[in-house]
Length: 316
Image (cartoon, rainbow, N blue to C red):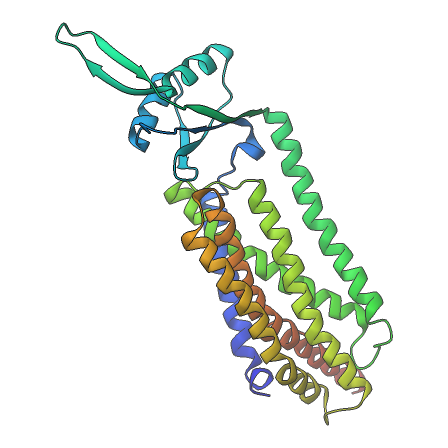
């Protein structure tokens, strides 16, 4: 009953978190990657004589490419993201990247040595129109998932009409999901502005995963509320919800913490190519667990209390 008794505190915390997350989104926007705005992705590997990251950056700039994002890929390669390339730029870039060392002779002539075992593992280009289409489809996917969740919960809880109608369970689950995805978006808007972190297709995949895991956790609590309402456990709706949370909180925390621990290992010990994916999932799972316990059900109680107040006023 502690959570329901202090529900206004937890609701206020969630409102503050959403506001804080929206500030960088509106101030800085999202730093979209090549998946959404178009561009070229090159992944190269070196079996030996691997240049350092600064040297790779100089070679990319030397190919006439103004801006690029470079990150390590595994222990012996780099992943380079840049604007769309012309055929001439592609040839110059790959030739430059294939050079392992460069030195100057006594006569001032630059001597270049080709890297042994140099390999282009990936070279892909995405046009701006394709990237925009992918972004639009991603937004449609998020909205479609949200609508399907409302319909599914409304159907699953169709026999619950008192004291709260079934569609309100779905609405509260969606509001909790908005909370769960807004916070990671805010974090990445901040990271994108100050550290150049990009939003890519993996980020969209992570958001959809967060929605799935979070709503499943919320449904567990809601299902227990439904069962306890059916069994008339509790003297009031608030008490029934409080009992239901107490009965499910241990299960929810253990399950979520297990996933979060795995994600933390991936975040700190995984490769750089999956680090952002692990980060957004970790943030989403943490706040998704919070919303399932401390937000969705308290909002349901708040909606019920508002409903009862309106009924009381109409009777006067």
